[in-house]
Image (cartoon, rainbow, N blue to C red; front, side, top):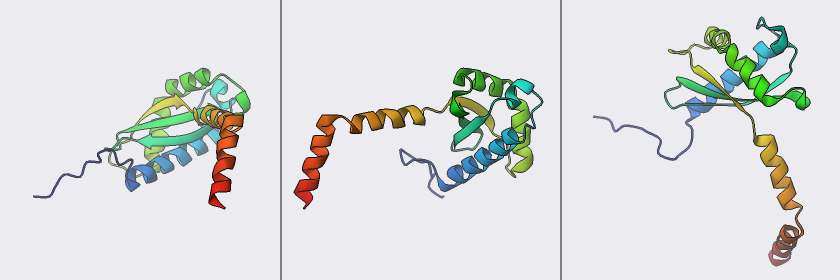
Length: 138
């Protein structure tokens, strides 16, 4: 009997990453080509930053952000959630998976974390510590 392979704190598998990237590309193309019949959604440029899939590939969490702050991120998430059935159908047509994953839309907060990281690195105390490490290495 084969041992069960359940990831325990190891992060996503190669298959999860590959399927997530395929879903991200498909959703980006669908949104870019304005294939959803909603003028409000089609007028909003949306970036699909990342898609993370559950281990069984039945749930895909899609992280989105409107480009250049053209609209509130909550509005974009609400519009995408409203049309998630049609988006799921488009993803299922493009991918050859046993199940079409359930799409869950969330705001992409990586840009906010990037700004916070930049702010932390510009702090004089951190700069002093980084400068001290560079002198120690030489």
